[in-house]
Image 1 (cartoon, rainbow, N blue to C red):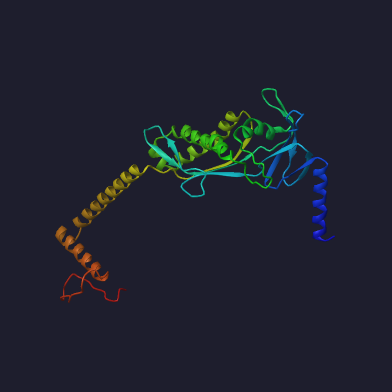
Image 2: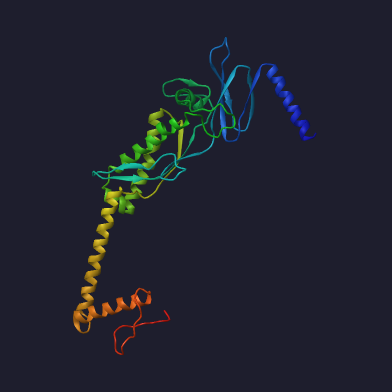
Length: 299
């Protein structure tokens, strides 16, 4: 059978279904749907799940709500593609560091019937509970069967149940450490990262009341420091380097043949020679016996 004929047959089939009073949920491999009866004389009841990549035939008055079925990434950084800007990290001092990274997660799309801790039965499983307790309230669902993410309220879901939880986990674990150790010490930073990774799933479960969202991985970059503190650290580092260089020069001069004056004259000669090679000064005739060494070839 030709492609045109197959397409025509399917189109005719859809017309028959519509005429018979049916609706179709046509999910992609990237999303999953929930169907609810919304008839004029019926109560609004859950009908079933529309699994990824399936075509499901429902009643004439069925409504369909779609959610992402795969792994999603929440990114906090200065990148244009990030979901939010870098987050702050409280420490056990008055200094707050800056955190960037990613958290990967997925919705628990199980549609197997279960009873939650309160004793309520959910015939549509964890996904039904997520929709009725979170998704429907925030309008985080999409009514577009081709949508890979949720709808207009998906951003509110991310901010409330992902970003805020990450922010809290960063602070809770950061407050155990001094900012300088967290910024400079690898062992301290690894302990902090493990703490954040261990804390986030529990915070999300406590906030949602069940395993409705599953955390897959947390990846944190080295914490940054505020701009003013960074400038201060750089100035201190430069001062320490200058002091170390001065100490090195002083020790070298003390052991230089001819003493400090001879060492300083040698340093001046090197500086002039370097300036000539770089073209910063005009090359003049060099008297025989001069300490200036000129290498015109640059080799």
